[in-house]
Length: 125
Image 1 (cartoon, helix red, strand yellow):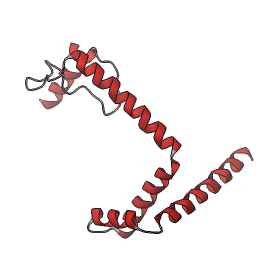
Image 2 (cartoon, one colour; image 1 turned 180 degrees about the horizontal axis):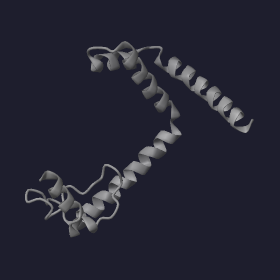
Image 3 (cartoon, helix red, strand yellow; image 1 turned 135 degrees about the horizontal axis):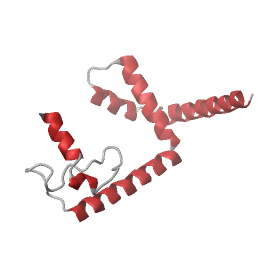
């Protein structure tokens, strides 16, 4: 029954008015989809979608300009998987408080750059 409701929602005229929303930006709050929903008008939903797209592009641009964030997140996740702490929040807090964190990330960035150069050399070989 639930699958039929979802199918009906996806095929409804309301959903067809908003083709191909970006991943994670489905129209869950449009009038007529479910009785309890409908806080946003179609115009508001369109404006919200445009705002979300703009924010996503800005976020992606920022991350491209700051590759150290990728190294930071990868290292933190690797440490969490390796150490398997009981309290991840405290562990992450201590990770970010480490006085050697900047040096550690700089070293990871250098290693990453060397790895990328080696990868490019091997691709061209």
